[in-house]
Length: 426
Image 1: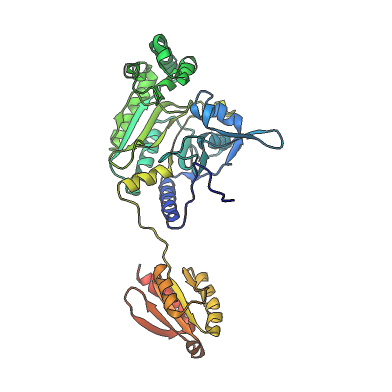
Image 2: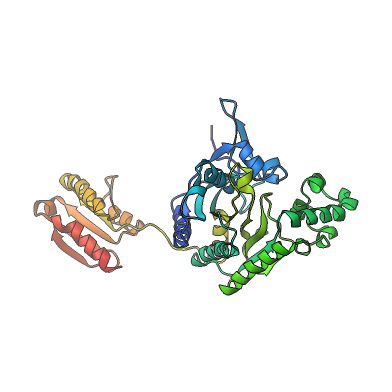
């Protein structure tokens, strides 16, 4: 039986995984520069967490979650997004009681959604996300937006466009909700069954429908910006003033609606303009979610965050021909001839690796020429050639693979020699 990988998943192989590691490491370093700390939460949670946190009316909860019952008859779900689990952990571990506030966290890991697989949209995908909990200051909204833009810029993505909107507070959304119902209700039969079901439950989600995006009623729908009360309007103006202060370009899009129910006030998406991205141009999304902590049993705590798919980020890098060269290269490859030399090479290899030097040797009894070819393929900076004659004289020949120069040194000085040469080349 030929067992293949499940649809909507992928193997990330050596040669590609280095790009992933580079992206994750760059994002982590940026987060740490902004004083965010890493958190790791379970890959599966109680299903109720996502029903309450993400929202019953969302496509994620209604159609896309991988849910199962375990042997203890507990209803569990593979996490479809990261925020709900982070907030659950924030509440359960009482992070709101720590002295340093707000609590600023980042995470990375696999998420799972049952969707039709396509470029940039997988059933198992990897998200990198940030959550800042405990501050209602508009300045932290600007900080989060600055952080995500910094990650993309340091990875080399260009032609970025930041789009922002305000979804307002509860009072503003209630007024806008009724206006949307009044707008769509007379012609709701023209819309898909999903939109018809959302009309009374969550009409804002109609604006996010892909099937009916070309319906003329979408363009003429009431704008949330016209229904912001004074407090919500003032908050949005403050966010924009901070973005202006740090010279972070943005566009206001009144039709921007995030696909999760917990968002309010600031909402945003980061897009990449240019060729090579197909139909998917949105690279990152997020926003403020005041009220989510309370809905999961915690104290009144404002929050804001974002998440992006690493798969989509790699699509952007490939589309702009900016995939970094991050192949793993060897510092030293041991070439051996003779049984005693092979035995000694195991000892030498252990010494090199203990000193922090990336080193390897032949394990297939290849001829000398084939061993040198292997060193070339592994892009070794140096090869160290040891035969039984050299071993008897306590020497070893070291070749610089870039310059072709060769030097004979004492066998017990190999590690120190390679260390100095590597440091001198940096």
